[in-house]
Image 1 (spheres, helix red, strand yellow):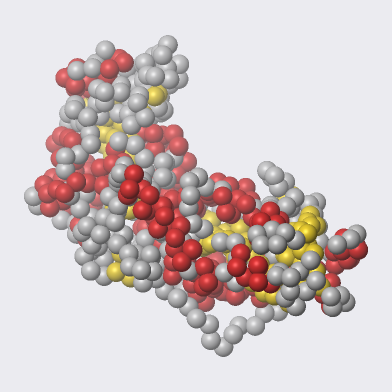
Image 2 (image 1 turned 30 degrees about the horizontal axis):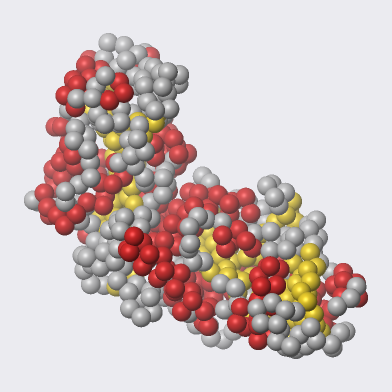
Length: 263
Length: 364
């Protein structure tokens, strides 16, 4: 499958900023989707609001760009009304961790068969850099000018706890692992969640001494630790960024019967 | 059968395939009924985590071609408003039953009111089209549920069926007509590449079903006929004018009122459960006529104007502080300014015939 077999060439060039991680995610997704052999015309792409949600507008398939936070609820309706369709959601930390947090934990609990790719850039990028529920403690943003007083959510741990069948987290540096996880997520029955830590030099980096995309990539390298090599199994394992570390890897792989498939 | 139960049977008759909802008094029997009935008919019922999720799920289901619906009451209806605007913008067919209860806020959960009339029209942001029907009886709950599906399928505008705690819980007989027209949306089956929202003189685009190879892009952003987002002022204006133009163009088909003794010296204008009391008053008052607004949005201006032409005393009877009243006043004053009065009632009890008689006696 060529790149523009999957993406809408007539909508190129895309709107993402230089140094954004979304281009890498789209590339990895292209490879992963081709590997699955899924039928493009039997796959529906769903998103909410934010930078990551604009991906689906570039995909040459049925796609629905919904309201802020509601992608998973819309995706649930699509999958249950027509279980023969494959459902893929692109979302961000705003949609998943804040305004749509309730839909996130309940979709994982219901274990509806869908794949959710959450691009976590630690910030509200499209609105110009406000703190999100994944902004690291003490980081600066337009709404945390004195440093973030709050602690971030660990979205992957939430998905595991709520009942997802497959959960993995990678940074955009881990292209091979990310591609393999995206493929696995789409082939897995039930709710699959892949969190992708991604740089936003424009809105996050600029205010945190990482305005150059290279610095953000370097930061992701320094703070991410593979799960099997993680030195701090306790707190850091559970808490993204709390101990200054992002644990990457596959967190769960199980086969709970998806919603609607209980005998 | 209860009004809410009649709604369940009508929805199934109309071809409902997908229901998502969240429990809320006094609409709950609609969801409970469909939880049992829909699986028997091969449809899907799901209880979502809140009303926002419920309307979002039926939007998704509708794009797979399934007739979809939810039911709620005032507080849940408020939560749905953003997505009602989204459904209107994306031309997603769906039906919302709003069993009105006393408000504001949690208000009187078990008692009837008509406080959501303006919320039904203007609850979401922006200039958007909406259709709202109002039910007075158990028979209406059956007939208007089917009509709600027919209108949403035909015009791709969300349809709200306004009932209330009285109509929803009222027990009564109803007749199922021997033949009822059931309309399905016009489907587009060709490959859609650059004109997913192309329309003809009806102003209603044909519906490309997800999974049929249409490759359509749907967005709540302002979009061109391809469905692609656009900031172009002309594209936005064309879209907003066309969306709203669907109602103007088809007003004759959408608007329905029941009229008894049109153009009487005095006319009662009412809708929903107070229409029963108004009807009772007319039995002993041959000088008075009534208009029951079965379609409340778009406001049936033309039909109402005809019905009250020559009338000297127009009395609006509704269970709120005056929501349809301003609309009636506007229509009544449009040509010759008539005396328009409001019999308003809040408190959670249904307007009675004697209250209407007493009010009429006060003058006019």
